[in-house]
Amino acid sequence: MNENTNSKKTASKTRMLVFISVLVAQGMILSFIENMLPIPFIAPGAKLGLANIVTLAAIYILTFKQASAVVLLRVILTAATFGSLSSFLYSLSGGVLSLLVMAAILKVFKGEISLMGVSVAGAVAHNMGQLFVAAIMIHNVLIFTYLPILLIVAIPTGVFVGIVAKILIDYLERVNFLR
Image 1 (cartoon, helix red, strand yellow):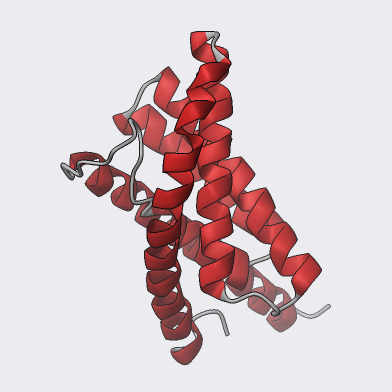
Image 2 (image 1 turned 45 degrees about the vertical axis):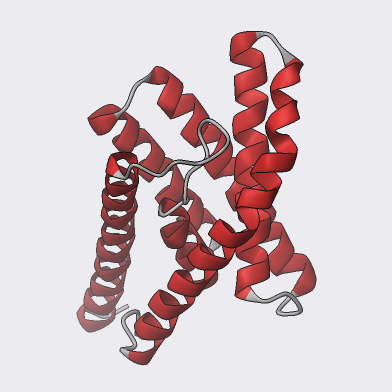
């Protein structure tokens, strides 16, 4: 390999690292903003899921390994900066399960399900992951009685996240950010 080829590979890796870092930072900011919003939901802990905008974009644009790095770094850094151990556990369980479900749907159905559908599935998975952790933390499976309410809330929040993620993905593709 010549020096020019190595330089291009290094520049490409650096560009990808910067892009992943920007997504992590965006996810952290969206989590911070969401925690400040006084949103009166019916079920305790129900939120808009703004950080999932970044997760969804990462799944569509990056490899699974890179999208996983975005989710894990966002969860760890957000908990370390703004959260607690319990917020870390809830975010980790919801974020990882959401990532796995959305990535699996994209891989298995390859474009047969809309971005909004994938997002709603991710919102449902996020709720399931968090309920699982809550059941362990409080030693009571009755927490799953919140599931029907959370599933109803997951539909509009998942659609909203999907719409915003679509705008972000379209913009990144239009400007050819990762060329």
